[in-house]
Length: 467
Ligand SMILES: *Cc1c(COP(=O)(O)O)cnc(C)c1O
Image (cartoon, rainbow, N blue to C red; front, top):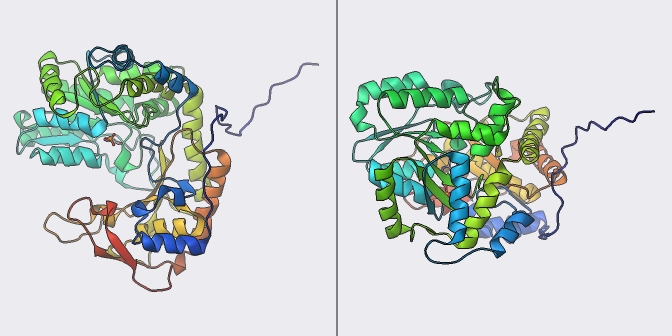
């Protein structure tokens, strides 16, 4: 008799665990005290007081034994280290770009690129600027323009590529602004600020065609290029049989360069790079990087960091890993949807985004419903998430306040860190909190800095006893 192989629907983690880090259980009374001492701002909590930490997927991943062993073999020479050459070879192999400039993280690559390209009054189109990208454009006097397709702003609309740029709006922006005032067109893959939604290859191709027609450089914000490549494979006609690495290579082939945070799909705890084809611009970028990052063959990274990234870029493109990564994020999303909770649909790559406006209609936007839900998740289950709503975006440059377009709570999943039982527990915490949603109250800000206030603002509950 012939035996058949088990076809399982269980997503088993495609790794086994050889090094463990204990996490701390606390009681709700302890957490009330801890959060109160942190001025009701989860950014001010100590990480050791958090059971499951979903603040960000940036730099929080677990490295593989292969990465650690490459790190031991690193070359820490100041100039021309073999670790740099391994890093350069990996980045070139995957992106195809000629010049590879290491940086200490993604925003340093943005700083170098935008300081050189952007002049006062220039317009920079992007699907959606990530917050550091927006800040660097503005810091150099530029005007960031988000040209996302309209489906990208509708949480419940199902569309396979909600990160796509509206190419008609791009053409219109070029017509109205004039080619000379657009020094670069960016595309963020996946679209982090828009829910981790992917961009299709067809859209990348079309943005590239428009950029080339007008002679405008086209750069990719590549932080989650591997996750985006996987979405192309499973959702776009013609890519089902392609390897993720070949999809990534095709994606980069349409661009003139990229900025990258290796803390995401570099599978590393720190690092990044700027890669590009233009010789003259690369020369200027290297000069500037010496000023802010270090010699061009280390640029703010240790030799061992470059080794970790060189290995990590390939691990991020591994099929087994990507299947598990994207499937486990979707699994969490499905559990929440089945319980009646509104999330951005379909789930993106690195996170699930809960629609707090929908869940907490009794809390007005300027009493911060998403902040309230974030705090409640910590109180009920020791989970740390992040508000992406009116605390993060509501403060205007003139000091007034305006509700953000959406009130979201992001549950960002660190790479290779949590298992399915952690995710099951997490879903229970969210659903349990949802069951008590009518008890949640609003918050007010007691003190705040003038920029990026969410990181350090102090808050308090408006109704005492409601927490
Ligand atoms: C994280 C991120 C950045 C910035 O990278 P850092 O390493 O945090 O400086 C830029 N763009 C996107 C889309 C990101 O997700």
